[in-house]
Each structure stands twice: as C-alpha cells, then as structure tokens.
Image (cartoon, rainbow, N blue to C red; front, side, top):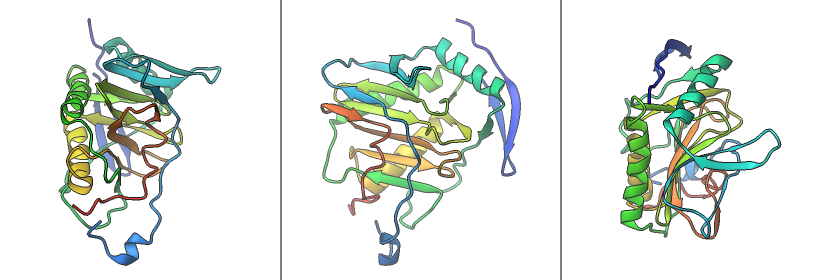
Length: 231
C-alpha cells in the first residue's frame, strides 16, 4: 500500500513544524481549577468491542461512528487536513516529564485508586504506537475525532477536541512522553489523561483507561479532580 508524503511547513507561535506525511504542588495551586477542553463524546460498550485499533468521529447527520483505523484512513485524514489549510502545531519534548510543579502547558488527570490490567495496558499502548510507526512516525488526528486502540479491558487513545483550531502531529516519542508524564504523576498503570498545548486551540488528549460498561473515553477523560495521586 503506497503512502502519500507531504513536504509542507506550517508555523504556529514561531515554531516551525515539518509535516512529512506519512500533586507536590502548593496548597494555593491545588485550589485552582484545572481547565479542560471541549471534547467530543465517543462511547465504548464492553459487550460489543474487540481488540484492535479504530477511529471515532461523527458523520454529517451527527451519528457517532467507530471504524477500523487503516493506513488509507490515516492518509485521507492528513490529506483533508492539509487541503483545508488548518494550522499545524508542534510538540516540544524539551522538558522533563518527571516534574512536580504546576505547568499550565502540560496537564494530567488521574484515576487515583484504580489500577488497570498491566498486560492489557501495555498491549493497548503498543498497538497505538505501532500504528504511528507504520505511518512514517507521526499521525494527525482530525479535529473532533479520536484514534484509539483496545486490548482486553483497556483503551489507549489520542483525542483531538472539537474546539481546537489547529491539529498537532503526534509522534511515538510524543506519545511516550505523555504517558511517562502520567506514570510519574498518577502512578504505574493508573488510568489517566495527558494534555499538552493551548486549551481549545491546539490541545491533544493522550491517555488510557479501563473499558467497563459504557465508557465515554474522550469526554470523560478529564473528569477527574486529581492531577497527581501523591505516590
């Protein structure tokens, strides 16, 4: 299967991005509300899900659609994004994910007290990374959509809020960084969500959680009131 390559360059806030297609916080900070983006709702029902990697979106009639994510679909999504002229933001990995101070550009939401099946979590994350690797090392999730992988009782996801005005290319190293941030703040195999970027402008959600009953994995991923489990 051939892949289309784009050699375009967009600039956001003086950061140039090549586009090859392919809490130890202070008490005062704890009192501050953690902003969350406006996120599309995508619900998984445990009685009709299978292992695999998928995309979720809403069709023209507003119906929620889940379908297998293929390389052709990823190519088509990137082509559509470039053709639309939507801005492309970059992801900086210059800061250590193992930080305990408040950083408005990097936020976490933690499911403290919960623990996912270790094997299922590892496999779900690896399947998502594998899809990124198979697509020249970077994916662009369309605004208002989600790419996600399911393994056993765990879903790993990248969601692009519908309120965004730009998309962000997610590389394997960027996903690894985000999940490392969650491990450091929430704990190993604790459900959580990581966001980097300007809320409602160019923020992508990355994380994982258990699939129990019906779970709205994008919209509910930032519902926790905890960003650090104090481990």
